[in-house]
Length: 335
Image (tube, rainbow, N blue to C red):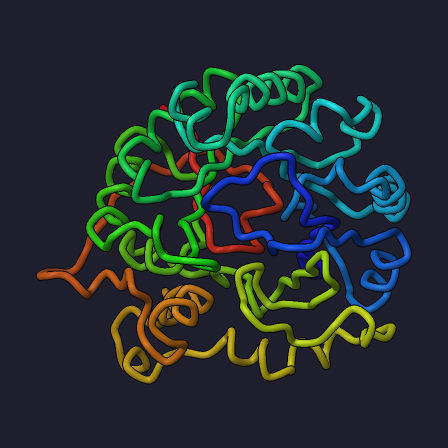
């Protein structure tokens, strides 16, 4: 089946959103030779192109052509710009696409991302949906929008798109990180008005009483390559396992047994005897490392409150979306 490979072709972006995890500072680009080197190192089943705004890297068309020629399923995440500027032939080769929309109305969206951000995002969704592509609207759950995500899901549905939620990760700071109550109330409100396509957010899986089924692929079946050439077990992981320059053909086994990948698969000591550990595995490893420490439970542990968190969700359509297996995430359809 192959691993899920996330490639950050660039950290350049025409926006500067406060919640973005992309590396700051000097602009870095990967070229086609870099991508080919990475593909030679791993058994790749699918690729997502994310991090910065991909169209700002001149190598994007050549990279898309190469992935297509190799028959690798590819998705692309964008604020809308790349999806509006790419030619239709290359767009139609993509397995699916994602457009970032964090708020359900233009004033809120534009205030957060910049003037015209909502108009561009919705135009991109409609263009791709009109071409017959499966489109997912992607939002980040933050302390500023946790109670409005169902409205974004319904906006997505009105344009023919699914809806995906990532929880804010404090890569640079914790200012937008939801509180424990906001996190759980946010998912309750979301599930009240949507049906669940898939969930790999470990603590949410535990609260739903669902089987892990492999859970999030971080450190297990996914690899992330940054624009600077760092190889990570998770896009939010703060230290590299190795570098692109050090990769050799067939490096996959060695990378997955590197200390960083092993650490990403670790279970905190306080969680090892927990009734939920088989489902959540101690929660999101990157979040644990960024906030309280890798050997501490997830800050959103569902057992942390006065009583265990229990969630209910109606099951929705069975969709094959590439992001479902390579990051802690939740995908829903509005009902």
